[in-house]
Image 1 (cartoon, rainbow, N blue to C red):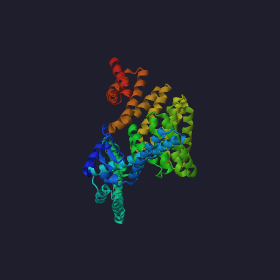
Image 2: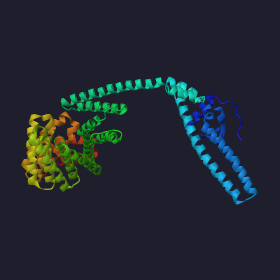
Image 3: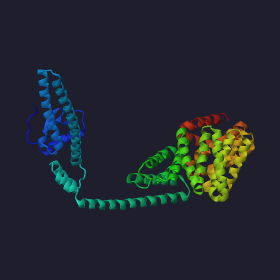
Image 4: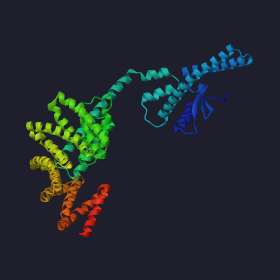
Amino acid sequence: YYHTYGHIDTLRLGILMQIKLMKLDCAQVKLEDGAVLLNGHPIVMAENVPLLHGHQTLQQLTQQRRQLLAELDRCRADYLADSTPEKEAAFFAASAALNRISEQLTAVEQETMALMTTVAEMTSDGRVLTHRQKEALKHFNQGDYAAVYAILKDEERENERKRAEARAEVSKQELQGYVEEELLLIQTEKAQGLTKERVQCILASYQKVAELTQTHDLNKDVLYDYASFLDSQNQQTEAIAVAQKLQWHYSNPSITVADDKKAALYNLLGNLYGKTQHYQEAEQAQCKALDICAELAVQNPDAFEPDLALIYNNLGILYSDTQRYEDAEQAYCKALEIYTRLTARCPDAFEPDLADSYNNLGILYSDTQRYKDAEQTLCKALEIYTRLAARNPDAFEPDLAMSYNNLGLTYHDTQRHEDAERAYCKALEIRTRLAARNPDVFEPDLAQVLWNLAALYKNQKMKEKLQQLLIQAQPLFEKLAQRDPALYADKAALIRKLLKHL
């Protein structure tokens, strides 16, 4: 049935395996009845390949299959000569036995071909082999499995493994030390104030650290800080990608992660999803954070009530953005209740958070046309931000400008135009200064207050002031329209139109 071939050496087998490794559609390699077939044609007899010839299970199953084929032929002949029920039963029994052996043989053949492919890969793709691998493979290809065991189960090999692990652990500690140094460098950059150049340096450092933690399986908690910084720079899409890597790491069942870290990550993801209008994902993440933190706060209120208040505040923002105003008010009030209590005990630590809650609740009141409540609440926020910005302008001037802008919107809505103009102009003065230092972060805020003030001047028919303001705003809006046309192109076009007719 098969052609007769002479001795097949390991070079010939290597050629065969190269064909298999190429994985060409036209090259089908398999074992069948003592031979290696290429596209259905026998090219290597198993008895000439030590790896196959020494495979006892393969040889036994092949022999059984041959015997059963002969038995099946005999039963078929008996049945054709005398079609009795007994001979029919014998024929079907032989056929069933042959099918079982054939299935077993196919499985063993597939495993053997996979093993042969692995050996071919190890010996032909140019990878560096250890001295033990080289020696063991030589015996393996000769079918001398006892020699393979002797080499690879040697006690000295285990000692070498332990020494290698120790060296790897030292290297890992050194790399972790480098990561800590890079984080200190980041803190040094932040401490000097964020300029465009420093932001780029910080992002480059975070990227370097993130790659090291991924490549060498170092402490990945730094990814949280990286995502948070990206968020602060209005790079929410990039921040989500980094935060999701940390989420995937935390989801590993073999890793123990503290509940407070999980809650913090869910809270961050909730904020990021909300800012990118993935509201369903945002609510799911925030509610997971809330569930974890609420339980932690019961056990240890001093440690976890601040985190609980933050999550309530962020849920309020999410519900406001999705016009679930009653839910938003309840969440803001819970945050405000906690922050008021915490601020009474430690004002330096919690006044900024208290101001944020007042600000957010004031915006909600304004959006729902409860203007008196809005003014009172926003003024409380403004009072705190003014005090904080006087002590630390780099940290709190952005919040102070935001507070002036929000109060200006409320005054505008209630026809208190002079008060609105004063508030807008204070916000404009601060944001102009901030945008000069860090345009990527603060130019959108500057554009916002310019737009609000222009709307006020237009409504009041203050043409001279409107013209001066639009001349100032036009270059900024043209620039932003190039960066984000969906958000700014229409506004830039309207400014051009208004200037043409003034």
